[in-house]
Picture (cartoon, rainbow, N blue to C red):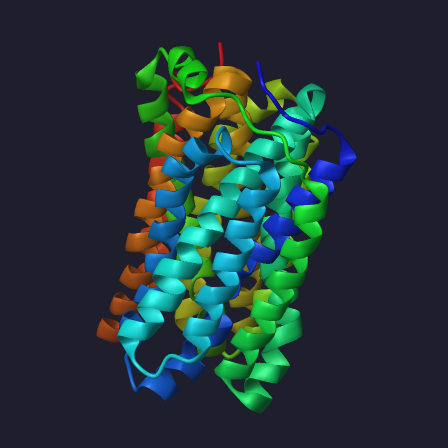
Length: 382
């Protein structure tokens, strides 16, 4: 049984606040060009900090749940928020690529993943009768954080530079973390031994890993370069980052309202939509149409937001509250692999051909691969 000290709206609100503040990691593209100029580095090189952060988030999600049964909830939140603030401040002071990688890629990434994993688990545990809805709202908040960060920081970064923007972001994360500490409660989670015994069918986990990884690879390739993709096409890059974050959040909220039977169908429908939009958009972007780029990014962000809310709920449906943390942690390593390959790969391809058409078409193929795997049916709930 789960040993959560508090249930209901308070812990859920705390998880939403924490998740939202940490989701600002996906506003990375508004820092991309300013950091390129400051560090005199190429796009692929600077993008590696974002990819490293995604890998670090994955590691923290995979192993972080081991702390949740040993430490009070508010302590986990304090570690996550405090570590994120430290990582952002290190990044703000970075004058070399190695320090950027340390601050943003390692410190911020690890703390971010710890907080995100905890927010997902505590929100589901605190609302056992509506875990799917709680998970959807928490993942939607992660996306909304990126949108709000883009809205609030785009102007200050342009006026005062990336250091000012990163320090301002650190302040916001710290304040949200303090509020979350007061709301999440002190209860601890179910022990790891109980979770281990709940996992039986590893074929399902492997199938989920493959379909999830290919689906999010497409989204991360686009979201990691949103501002520059739209700028290259002649559209409003900074504004599109904010819009993409909002679309991402809408996808998560929409998914939180889906019934279990609908979630099974959407395992195929969502990546199929992503593939179609990217294929059409990739061909259209050859003409440099900024509004097409905006539309493509918005739809991909919407489906990505729905996908990252869908899969936690599917795992919870399949393995239950006790089996969820370990199963989700292992499946989530696919997100880290996609985060490592996607943004850096897109940056390197852009440097090679000086255009985003090829990365976008490859992202479409990845989404199509997710459709094929999810369509086999062996990853669905019984």
